Image (cartoon, rainbow, N blue to C red; front, side, top):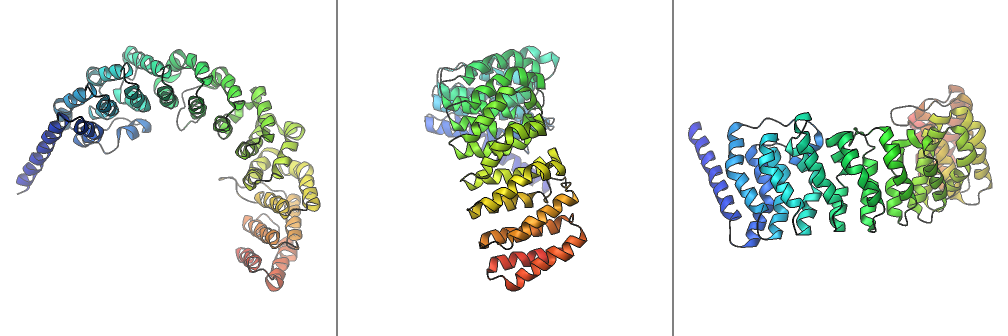
Length: 475
């Protein structure tokens, strides 16, 4: 009975493959187009892959074994379909077929001898296709296709070089859409090819792409350059390459006329924070952008300043960054002010409790006392409270004197005339309580009595609730 069921399953699968082949050869272009669209998934299913080709290549793990029978089916039944569709007279069919090249490569177990005969000619033809839409679709998946070819190691250097030459051609394509799609693959191509191929074939093209007249190309390049500095995506490029090839581009991007380009750099510049000490022009640009009209740019600068303090030292922060930091704290946009709140734990780890207490908190206290806006007072209280919160897995080292100052400000906030400020102060005392870094004497003589009194006398229900939560966290 089991053998019969297995035979019927195999017969059904064989019939499906025959039907798919018939559809791929249909006289109607729309039918062939639909076959080309689903060819990649069909190949992966026949090969028995549990992951998509894109996920397999992205993971960087070894190709899972493919049964010989499955590999034979892909080679003799599906590869001819792939080759026919990728050379179809209709570009709307070809563009979908070439997108499946990565799936075919993985379906062939990424065996370089086979992929060089089957997939590489399609890649070669797709890169030189007269239809820009075909080149565009191939450019979008180029790193996946490259990874699926299996050209790894010194024995395949010539073929890998050829693939990188194709990629360089797409980066210089006449159509901006093709260039933009290719640019998105730079980080993963650098990971696949390593420093040598990157410097020979990609790095020389970066200055021209950074000056591209089309904003989308520059925006994608800014994004992918920062991805090249993310170890989770690309860990093959050295600091020397970043300083030599990327630094001039970063300087240009930070002065780009479009905020979108600037933001791609600013929001991820912390990935190269250890190199900011050698990037004077970049640091200067960041300081100028603290006054940018776009609030997202100001927010990104605010989040970056603690990393600058780490790279350049606390003295540099005090001389050059303290004024921009305080202005960002007083910004009209809440998200910009929150950037300073979120940066306090990092700043504490970089500078230490003594510097925070001596150089920064006096400015905060002055801002709290002199401000006519309750929003500024809330921001100050949130900054104080953030010092007691864990920064990732590392608990902040708050000195006894600094903790007493934090508690004093929070207690003052509990008496504020505005309910919102009192609520934030109560929440801050809750954070202090949870941190466990406040000494028992201060807790029993100041914090607990103040919270208990608020629970009894507070008219605002939200404030009363936050005070109750703070007391419960002590218990």
